[in-house]
Amino acid sequence: MKTIAAVLVETGRPLVLADLEVPALKPGQVLVEVAYSGVCYSQVLEWRGYRGKDRYLPHCLGHEGSGIVRDVGAGVTKVKTGKPVVLSWIKSAGADVTGTTYRWEGGLVNAGPITTFSRLTVISENRLVALSDNLPLYHAALLGCAIPTGVGAVLNTAQPKAGQSIAIFGTGGVGLCAVAGAAVAGCVPIIAIDLREEKLRLARAMGATHCIQAGDCDPIREIQHICPDGVDFAIEATGRPPVMRQSLASVRPQGGTTVVIGNARYGEQVELDPREFNLGKRLLGTWGGDNCPDRDYPRYGRLIASNKLRIDSLLSCNYSLHEVNSALQDLEGSTVARPLIKMSAE
Image (cartoon, rainbow, N blue to C red; front, side, top):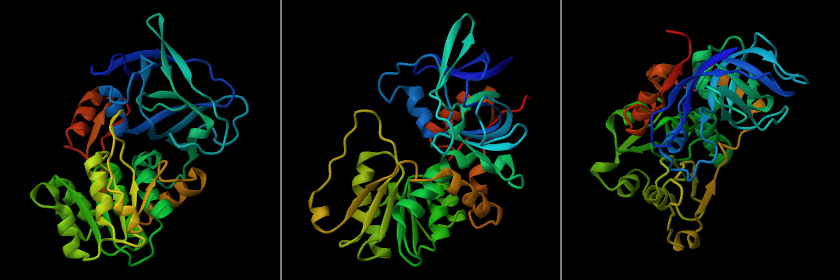
């Protein structure tokens, strides 16, 4: 059995579409037919070589998506053949299988416990969550990373109370999901900050009450016009060290909290003013929104189905697998918020 997949052969070069031989399943592995795969900025960092030396070339990419189970390996009990699933890099219950290798033109292509840039993919059981039949696969694709990371950073990590204020720095895919999560939490005001006007329009559609175009002003001063003492919470979703400093500066003394989601390039450092901590501010990291996927993903799915979690604005830019390099370039250039790859044959 073969599958077409987008393979990273050399960092800084376009991904190569390859016909890979699908191996027999090991115990704890699942064969999934991918319907949709999201494209995360983490893949841009890998593609460009910004995460340091890549020891696994050539390898498959992708860590969020949705699909249908086509076969299960020995011992798999969590998911069933023919049923829809969410594919996610965040570990859940089930067997933890380190990865697999595919054969290609006489050589081997590496893959981790989850990869999604292919029509058929071998996944570790604990990177799958069963999906309700009433949530379309199209909507479910971003449950694997963007939604749990952004929404979870608000609901699980920051844990604001209704009526507390929040600022989201960076309104790419994950930042927009943080905006949507803040709306679910009942935050007021919800302030979105970005360089691009079109992304701020998306933020408005997903629940932002105020928008600041950072290239035209000092965002901290603008936040203080809205919340003179600073906001209760800030979410940093750009991965840029200067913005991480700004996000900490934006929160109020004596309890203001910043949560950093963004992935910086390998080797980058952030310098902070220690007086911020003397003022009683808190700086938190988050591991993918601190989710328990088997508990939280069904909850997010119900919020989407009930239109309380508004994500339709994120699902406006679709690509075919043959356009995967365009998807990466567009995401890197910030012309799209979250590319979605439709895996069905053209």
